[in-house]
Image (cartoon, rainbow, N blue to C red; front, side, top):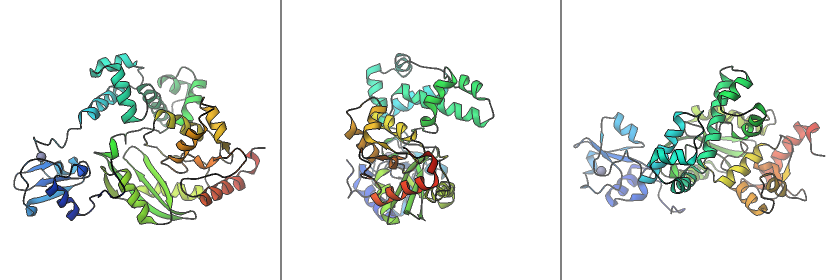
Length: 360
Ligand SMILES: [Zn+2]
């Protein structure tokens, strides 16, 4: 388990220390290459320790390969642990033909793992079941089709939805949610991020190449960056203000009340329950609120009010999943992951910019 005191390997000194100690917590956080052998390794590799002056560090295996190094045969830095490899194979099968509906049995045949084991493994690592993954994928196909100018009926059919009405049920919440950051702690991914000042304090936005994986508010940019390091301890992390600027511009506009919805691809993992709750949150219209009880009812678990509150509190992307629109039954603001006063300010902004849509 990662704890708050685990190193995050952001300096060459800490990276070298990890190599010397063969620290397996560093695996995935970076790779090291040895100039004299032309080989690159995971930090925990059991082969003979190289000399410091011959070592170079890389954030990803791709970067090491681009610099001309070969993967070590012993620690196999480019191969995933077995369980991840199974899930990655399953995702590849599903990605190969998003229009096709595959049953769990068909998928398990394709990857040579029992249906039970596959279902459990897939849900644990991806955060959704294979069936939900396919639904999200069809939404992705639909989004692409609409962007390329196909009409809705045609696009709906191509995406595998039975009818436009089924599409409208499924799509608003699913658009753009592609959980590729499923590899634990972002192993093998590169996460780009930036921080910026907003009227609500400092915001940190981070994204994989598939979509936004974190939006967080705080009072201190360094603390937010540290937290990102813990959430994505095994990802390569690169500050990239230019790439994040379009996202930050949307957040600023939203906070100032000049924008009502986000057009952000999301790349977040979720348990099946979190996903149901987060989808329900995304259906709450701008300027309106719902109680935790109402959300619990809308996801078909009327007694799971506390679990709904927990799912709200674990939302990784502030605003994009509008957990600030959930309040206590009596209208109390209740808690907010990024601070109660920020929640109050957001609700006030939405109310004052959307007076006609207020809940009676
Ligand atoms: Zn090695």
